[in-house]
Length: 291
Ligand code: 6CS
Image (cartoon, rainbow, N blue to C red; front, side, top):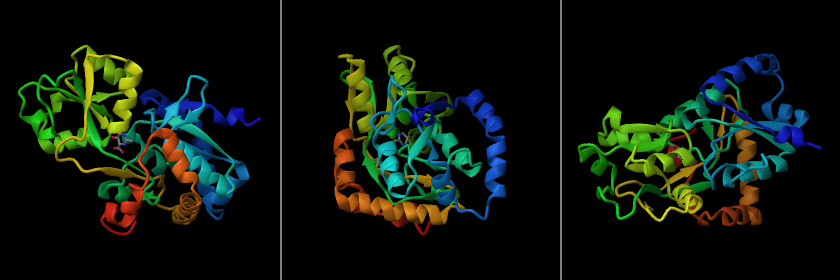
């Protein structure tokens, strides 16, 4: 019945441009209908456009086309409480999520986008929902002995791969890993392959993502090193356009209900996320101020 709304739009570089053209009419409609709140519009149309990555267990597009993972499942449950029946997902690079929200190509981001001060300057976040420690996937036995981003920077040749616009490449840059040794990896499958082929020496992602990728790869010559020395546990939340404070606040309220009802803990358990981590912090702390 609503299967047509579950379809997935893949937004590669070319795809994003095409999508912007396709949505040109819709973008116009959004600004024209400024009197109507975003939430009212989503309720009326029956779905929300969400941006996801494809990084299990945070976000996943199954072979059947079903969109799942902890972040979209939380968003789906919260939106349902708000009266928005369905989601339509687009795969996006992390670095394209904030510009996409700003251009109203998506109504929200549900991808495990970490809440960080710079990001808080561009968009609004929900209260945190999912947290994880950062990890390195390396060849078995960690032959280059890389335990921190500083170790990668200090090594003469070590190359580190991470998702485009993601926290890992930023951490590498901050640690002094030079340009040519910071490699953008399009997805987890490619990251594992690049490591297997020796095109990168480290694949950096959250621990749960790398554990899932290793399980899928079934390669005894690889291992996951976690946590990365000197890197804090990050927490993510859903992302919203800056103008959508009302929608974000309503989302927060429904997210709290989800947490209080026990439904949230069930979603976390299903995808292997530790319970209670997000409750140890809040948006204000993670943003470094109001958002
Ligand atoms: O928000 C981020 O930057 C990171 N979030 C996840 C879930 N994976 C990698 C990405 O870099």
